[in-house]
Amino acid sequence: DAGVIQSPRHEVTEMGQEVTLRCKPISGHNSLFWYRQTMMRGLELLIYFNNNVPIDDSGMPEDRFSAKMPNASFSTLKIQPSEPRDSAVYFCASGRGGTSYNEQFFGPGTRLTVL
Amino acid sequence: AQSVAQPEDQVNVAEGNPLTVKCTYSVSGNPYLFWYVQYPNRGLQFLLKYITGDNLVKGSYGFEAEFNKSQTSFHLKKPSALVSDSALYFCAVREGAGGFKTIFGAGTRLFVKA
Image (tube, rainbow over the protein chains, first blue to last red):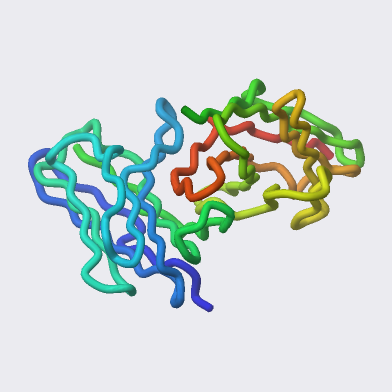
């Protein structure tokens, strides 16, 4: 199994530009999570999908952030317009089912730098 | 609301010595507890979890963790540390019975010196 796949691995952009991060979860997993990691704030849950449906997006910082999951094998996180404070490592994770006791499998992350 | 605390930013231990990384939690219901490890420039990897049953849980790479309900703790342990165990360790908690939201601790950096 290839694991969770994220692209790009690194993204450098200028303030005001649109950024799209992509994620392919592990086949057969029906829950998907987007996290953001920074030194200051640690690991933050942004949004959670179950069976392609957004369940909780309360962690999304503001309206500049949006996430979609058009099918079971693909999700995107979009930032428009981007700002320097969005610089972070963004992780996608997937898991089996919607139950509490299943662990999550993390992708390698996308390191975003907004200049 | 659920929360998890890792009181130590960093733990230093000599290779071959036992190690402990501390974690305490707070949930209103039954806790589901997890440990993850993160190596440089990598995503988090699952180590072990406590759901129910035996309070001592064994996981990957020789790690184990002990669930203590009275102290609301879930400390990660290993009898003999390796240099390759040096990494960032995260404790995480989920509220049982349908809770999906995982709350991660701030992380503890483990340094194992040869």
